[in-house]
Image (cartoon, rainbow, N blue to C red; front, side):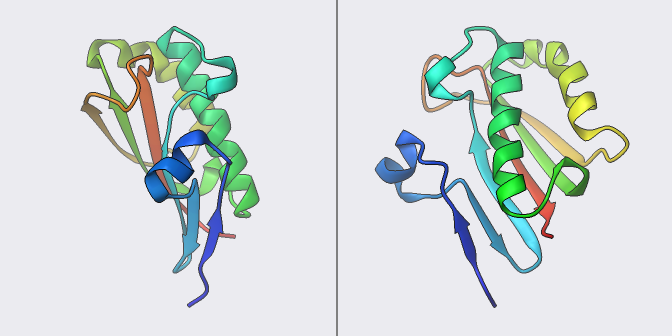
Length: 123
């Protein structure tokens, strides 16, 4: 089996020892993504949009896109803020909604409000 590893160059990839995405077994596994640190929005909706942008770039590099996402997990520091993200998520997934889970959790940085992880079909 061929495995392709995709790095975004994020600061935690080297510190923790992971890559942004792995293409293997016909799937693209995208690690949990938070807002891009260079332009970190302070609000949940802005962070959601930024995280979706990081995911979109990883999927594109893997030869996939949001229409091929089959599973998504949302990690929220305050689950009451999740509803404010729904319009962005509907726009991202459109007519191809994936199976989804939302979990309230403490994230790696105290500034992070949302982290999004996806699994998509490759190619």
